[in-house]
Amino acid sequence: MRLAPSTVADCAIVAIVTLAELLHEAAETHHVVYRITEGEDPDWASWYADWLLNLSELPALLGSNPVRSHLVHALVQLDRDYAAAQPGERWEDWYAARLGALVANEAPQA
Image (cartoon, rainbow, N blue to C red; front, side):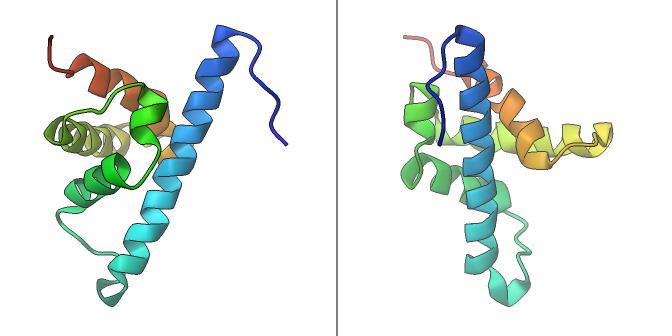
């Protein structure tokens, strides 16, 4: 059972954990869809972006509906950065801590 967040910091942590869970779910779903290639998909970021925007709670979690191409770009950049940094944490957690800021910075100006 999750407790309701009591501070802004708690809300941010809950959002990151929830986003990491969505990324993990996307990865599992992608692997099932691409089972015949054992998950191999050179255009994985496009598939993830489409799934995250249309079949998950990502837009509600971010409070906006990011432009698909911006999300694809952010996912590819995070993949490159993660490979370069080689952090000791799961990729889902690492991406989740950074993804919101990346797509927010690329949001179209009103």
